[in-house]
Image (cartoon, rainbow, N blue to C red):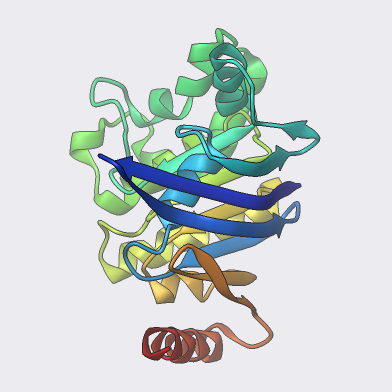
Length: 246
């Protein structure tokens, strides 16, 4: 469903060029929950920004569904981001002047299509993510975990092909983090969502089907979960230590 092939990205500073991504190849299947982990500077955020086409890449291809993203004009890219991608950010990015329910509907408001189907889907997600009791509250009046669950619901309102999550538990305590990860699991189980998550949080990553470990702009290892969450978490920590030693 998402195919990244031979992806290269570098940055220039003065006369020098710095390679950040060095031939990344990866695939995310429909319905998968995949995490990307690695030390600071390994290229995680750059990879996410290339997939969303917020920054250009040097070489390679990124295909979402059947659509190749490289070379699209800005209007087409904006349409792809609104209709085929959902975004969840570390800082929630909710609009303070809108209620929880209105925030969830923002992508449909942008499209100009807030019909009965959107209203019904918003109600479904409010219930699914356990935030129906706060539907009429504003972001300043709810907890960080509730804000992030609202952001997850918003990312799904257009029923996108792929959700891109950038450190979604980074500003949350452990209990709220657990609740947000459960929201992603519910989105996959109940709505068929596909999630691609960049994270430093090994606990959050242990809930994923697969974890891609990045080091120095290359895929160091691709870990498939074959055990319970706790055992997978221990294996993740062990692999991260081995990657740092190497």
